[in-house]
Image (cartoon, rainbow, N blue to C red; front, side, top):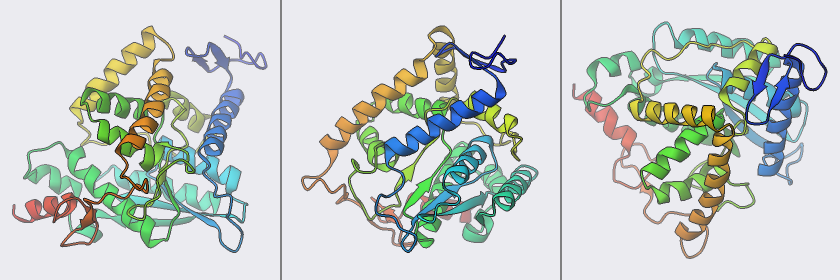
Length: 325
């Protein structure tokens, strides 16, 4: 199998496009799509200057997606004085797993001379995921706890670093799964929130001071291609799967989409194209009358001050359950 571009040995066949690509042309293809997404989303504030740069916090876990994202963003914007980037790594307290991925984060940040910060559940919440899984006071999957804690720290530290944007390495497979889950759950309001939170171009989103807006520049790139990209560029990547990962419902959705893609190449792209268009319509329908995106039901958590629709936020309620064990 030869590369369609140069005739060299191909390492990948993208069934959805029919393309056969060698390592170098796969690298160029991935980078081209990420750059296009950055441009179409308007990631770089047009008013940014060297004296007042756009500040980006990148969620760097050491896995393939966040490593690829960090490398590509540094390639494009690392020397741009209008952009200031910081890599944020969260240690959940999973013995033998996160330590290895932190090493990959440190190596990459050093290679790129990028500022890197490490925070942990243990320091911030006095909990470790290994202990949370063992105690499990809410009888939930580990990911249900971890997702709440992780989102809280990403948002808290992005705000503390005065970030303008929070960037995460969600790929096409991740986003197609989330889209399908929202559809199957009939959660139109969540679809609407998704547009303003991380999907819509920045000049089309409702403005809000409640959260640092997110962006997902990898969301047009399939997971397999991200992995191959890291391999081709020999990036420091921790490929092991979390030992506590057990999102049964997402796993079912993942298998369903994988089967669809096998039988109908391009299904993931179609799911996301339709979802993004519908999310824009839903966002318009669910925003308040002023169109400013502010949720009148949101207030401050009585314990930590974070934004919540209840008196006590989900994170604090989970920590209270863990303390009671």
